[in-house]
Length: 220
Image 1 (tube, rainbow, N blue to C red):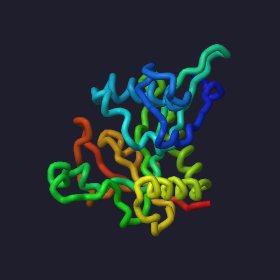
Image 2: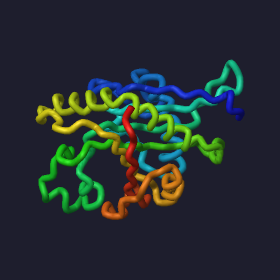
Image 3: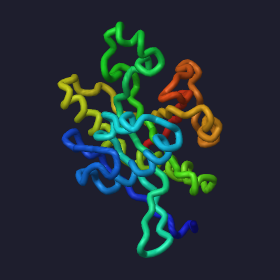
Image 4: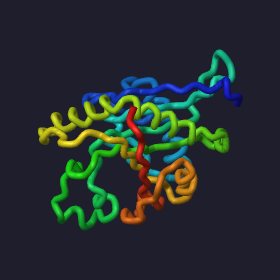
């Protein structure tokens, strides 16, 4: 791999009517989303033993996805890393940390009451390309994009409220970024300016310990 062989592509939110599937199962996936899923399945399903049926969720239809490609030759274009940006709102944190209690608390599907935040998820680099800074490259690419497209993020939030017949959002996105980081990469994100929020605690997602981390951006 050489730096000049790497390119990055972005997939806008496919929308609520998109029929998204695991890679190779359907021709309906947008091309970049299909490639993102190739990376996600290889890392999360094949390597980390996350159930395949858990890899696609309801956030995929409303999220932006980025994929890094390696093009070692004119005939090859290999997806090697990916990241997802989920616009506001996010689910109540209790749904993750105490799912058994959340079922009895009649919690809403989304938290509209706190300051809106975007969430970076599904950060994945295939094994052969690790140690090259691709995770950092993707995070910074996405954060730069977000600071320049706050209006699009707010529009996505308003569209979700309309689809659900919820009241329109009362707050605009002001640069707050949330990460649900696997514990073994917490220090990497700290070096990128994220701060662990101890009040969120630790929780298990698909057998992997996670922590919540935040960073504040200045919106362009």
